[in-house]
Length: 198
Ligand SMILES: C[S@@+](CC[C@H](N)C(=O)[O-])C[C@H]1O[C@@H](n2cnc3c(N)ncnc32)[C@H](O)[C@@H]1O
Image (cartoon, rainbow, N blue to C red; front, side, top):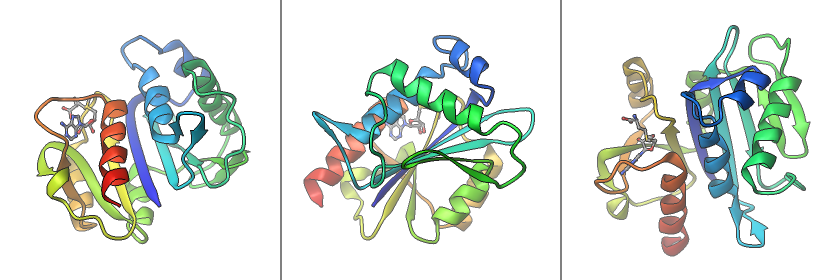
């Protein structure tokens, strides 16, 4: 399995605010683009990928929306609007949830009130964590054994305190080259590298 975590620090957990933030400062379209490129291939979707979108602009708890491609049946299309609608639906379903609760959104899709820190601690049990960083080891020099999990952010960088948590969990920094890319571009390059080498 390949896992991808997009930590969207500026993404609102209120569905209406989330949808209204497309093209605005929070750039919530990043979530749809990243989801699209992580899950879909031409005429199909991958079936060995789990994507976690962590939305952190909230009055109560972060929302972690999980898309597990082993169980997803019909997501409603791969265009931006379909994916944004699905995320907004998950946010609506999550209203009123207490800390560390999970609800089913659709087949293969869940929403949880768990934080990024708790999520990565849980993922570290089954996955080797890789933090995407322009200054890390080149992905072409990295050997992948077992299940990799790639950690990305939106346009707001990872806060310093998270680095200590990630270091403790053995996360390694991986680079895709000298240009600063969108998260949605990173996932294409990561998939391609693994597709060729695994
Ligand atoms: C638009 S970038 C985030 C930019 C953010 N302002 C920063 O300074 O980290 C989105 C995500 O892609 C990752 N990323 C962008 N270019 C990369 C590269 N060349 N190699 C590895 N990761 C990259 C970043 O680490 C981040 O997780």
